[in-house]
Amino acid sequence: MKLLLDFFPIILFFIAAKVYDIYVATAVAIAASVIQVAYLYFRNGRVEKMHLITLAAIVILGGSTLLLQDEQFIKWKPSVVNWLFAVVFIGSQFIGERPVIQRMMGNNFMLPNTMWTKLNLIWAAFFIFLGVTNLYVAYNFDTDTWVNFKLFGMLGLTLVFIIVQTIYISKHAIPVENGDGDTDEDEDENKDKD
Image 1 (cartoon, helix red, strand yellow):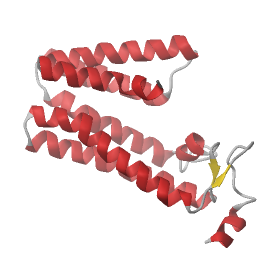
Image 2 (image 1 turned 180 degrees about the vertical axis):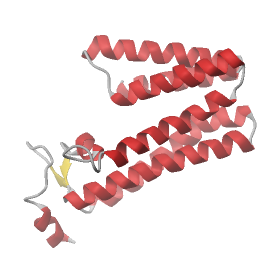
Image 3 (image 1 turned 180 degrees about the horizontal axis):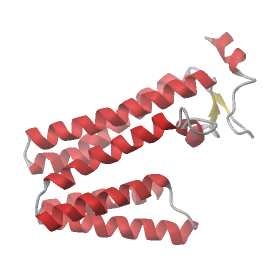
């Protein structure tokens, strides 16, 4: 259910772009994002930062697309969002107690702190790569190809990345039964397993 909710605006954008055009699709994506965030707020009493960043980007860049009738703004949205995520991941290396990736995944398994740092930077690099790849497709292919890439290409790249990441961390991870994922005590134990 959560996965469907996360992809709700993207799927509606894709359908509207195929049935109508990029401008109708942009309006649909803005409305879907507002509905998504409102639903999450009323359901959970809070909204994840990822959804707020995405909402701000779609309202600003999508609104610019509609106001100026220029599809380039909406084509920049995935890059801007991915680069903002990269900034958050990199910034978390210096601000806060733990990197973002450890806060997101640390309750599921334990890793040495150095691995959390590496994993966090790998995610930041992946977000930068996605942003660059999006612009490459946006400026070198037609709008229909870009719409296909936005849904299938970016999702496919993300799934491959997650599979590779899972293989990478499975060699070092220790499942957490009842803990917070901190690994200072277990760092030496994990090194012995290598």
